[in-house]
Length: 248
Length: 132
Image 1 (cartoon, rainbow over the protein chains, first blue to last red):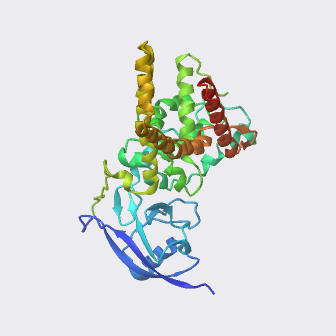
Image 2: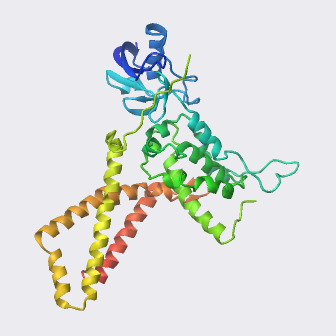
Image 3: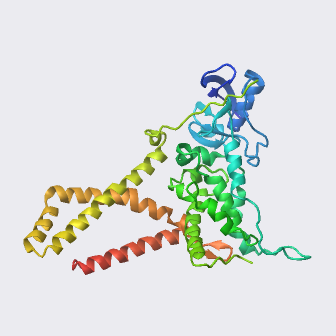
């Protein structure tokens, strides 16, 4: 028999058609102990207040839609369990993003940044004829961890650099660029360097490390960014010395 | 229906009070003031040495041995250890990736390596200074 626990859910509300600024609304939710906090929010929507707006889809840490601030911590609400939380839980939209409505944030800026870093395989040589690219397990292991990102944007909500300067490309987009730089099939490292090593690129990161601590998929963006600083410096010297050797 | 997104700008002056993670980060970054102080102190020491006057050099040494300065150096050392040395050594494996085929060298090896290098460097300095 699973117990029921009553929790107070303080949810930030904002209606762009009525409200000048966001405010909190409290709901009392009878939670099963095995619920994720997303289940409690769904309960509010289904049983208490149908006007509540928020994003979610898969409920299994795959889609990356349900990122919110849970008691001040950027979290995937499907991965954050009621049993680990106190009786009063504050839910806010992800920090550092404009609020569209209630718990829904505007992600246009990050979407543009993800595109900006050229997150696709760039080839200078033509691809192999009549056969696939070969990639060993060792080659794959170099970047596999970085492919785990689900774009939940918890890392942007945790990053004070992005909070203070919206031009900063930020943790997820830069990690994605690093993922392609490390891919043995890719030859676009020097092409990406202009974006990544620019003012708004990796050097804007001051290694607070909060992005990695909140990442629900253990992508470790902070590590990726520090490795990119080293790679970027080496690549810059190579270009200065006319040694732009790309992988073949 | 119209869009009117609400912006919540981060305070430029009090943002680091938002959570303990940011506070620890700022404490780490504040060690830069101590780094600056010790850089100036080194320059002052070199200037005293370059003055070619035993009196100036001994004066400099005496100034560093006053009770106040000894307490200051001790506190500075503790501050450095807890907010510079320990956190940075802990973070070092993030930037240093040593690959062994499909696996990575475990973080602990890299962290221990840093401490060993630190002890060796300290021993060399103490040896040069004639302490050991």
